Image (tube, rainbow, N blue to C red):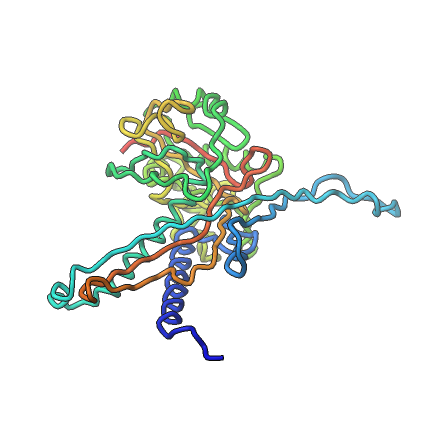
Length: 368
C-alpha cells in the first residue's frame, strides 16, 4: 500500500517538534529544575504524547515515616504504607499566530520574516508556559492582575486547571501550613515596611521542613536545597537588607562548585534564591485587592508580591501529542503567510489533602 503521508505533513511535524524542543529548553533555562523525574520543581508527564486522553495523573511520593523494626523482630506485616498521593491534570490548548502583510512588504525587508515570526511564536509560548507555572503555583485566580507596566498578565490564569488558592484564614492570620505573610497581622495589614528579608527566607525554609509531609529538597550534585523565586521588587528589597553581604558570600562559595548556583541572587538557609518577573505581583489600585480577585479572599492593603519556595513536584505539567505545534500556512492566493504555534497540555499545582505538596508562598509588600 502506498504511503499516504505527504512530505508537507512530515515537514510540519518536524517543525512542531523542533519548536517544542526549543521552548522546553527555554523554560528549563529560566526555571532550572524541569524534567520527567520527581527530582524537579516542575515534573513533566509525556504519556499523552503516546496515547489519547484528556487527563494525566502524577504520583506524589512522600518520605517514609515511623520507627524501624529492630533485631529479629518480624518486618513482614509491619511495613509502612507508602504515602502516595495523586494529582490529576486536565489538558487544554493555547494558540498564537502572526501573519505577514504580503509579498510586497516582504520584498522591502532583508531579514527572513518567517524565521523571525517563528522566533516570536517561540518566545510567546515560553512566556505563556512559565507564566502559567507561576500562576498555578501561586494559587492566582484573579484574572485582572497587571505587571509593573500596567499590562494585564493573569487573564488566562484558569487555563487548563483552576489552581488551589491560599486559604483565606491563612492570609488573614499571616501564617499557615504552607503560607507566610511579612506582616504577622495578615495581608490586610501590609505596609511599606513589610518587605522581603532573609529572615522571611529562613521562616519559609522552616515551614517547608516541618510541614507534614515535609516539602522535599531538590538534589543536585550532592547539594540538597529548596528553590525560592521572588519578584524583582522583592529581590531589590532583600539586596538592600543589612544581611545581604553574608548571603552573597555564601552563594559565591557554593557557586564555585555547582553550576546551578550561577546567576542566583544568593543562597540562604538551604534555599537557592532566584529572581523572576513572572512571580505574581498585585497592584491593588487597578487589579482588585487580592490574588483571588476583587471582593474575594482577604484584602491586601499595599502592593504585594508572592514569592514562592519550591520543593520537588511542586508543579506538574502534562504534554499531549501535538504534531502541528508550529504551522506555516498561506493565505490570499499565497500572497500572505501566517505562522502559528500551539501548546496542548495542562499545568497544575500539586495538592494533597487541600495542602500544597511542594510550595510555600511568601507575601510581602513590593512597591515600585
